[in-house]
Length: 287
Image 1 (cartoon, rainbow, N blue to C red):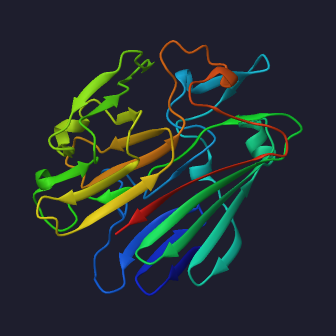
Image 2: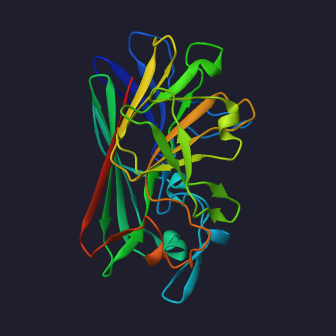
């Protein structure tokens, strides 16, 4: 099922499979900001990452002396959400634990995903409710992909701007997990210029950002996408194969480090939520 909501300025489309944002446009222009998916490169739009972010070592984790399988980014992105509420400029979808999820993730939960339009922004909020009789452990994140380029054919004339930031701290991804040794990524006047070469070694996983606002735009400043977020990490990703999209990913959590013991309770970036408690986080996209 596909849902459409709008206000005076923008319109979006959301599907119930994965509660995924699949379209974002201004009402006064015929320009699509969200990557429309192409199996040649990557057939998703803006998947939700839950109950893990990134990849686990050997695609598994340990809890209470038992091993559970979990593929990259978790199962929410491949789950059917139910409609919880729908208004002209807001929609909320819900995913609840089931017999199927309990085989992969032995916790009872409810995940609410809400899209709210505010002028030229869409605010995306996540609410995780612990319905277990014990603490639950999870990570959650977003993976929105934007068309790159948006208006010009020259992809190299686009950049990410991090205001008041001289350099970025990158956690290098390896086949054996995240490296313990950080890398320093220098910026040019607060700007990270985009190229396919930038993603030759997979995503840029960033932490300790001083300013949690990032702007994606071209050098002519004709058009832009701005994200504000409150997560602990940020991922930037595309495929170094001419893929015409770039992902800007706010995360509350991160992939396994190479020396991790696989215990979910001890995973870096994991959220520990007590019984009957609620965790909430959000980010916004301004166009």
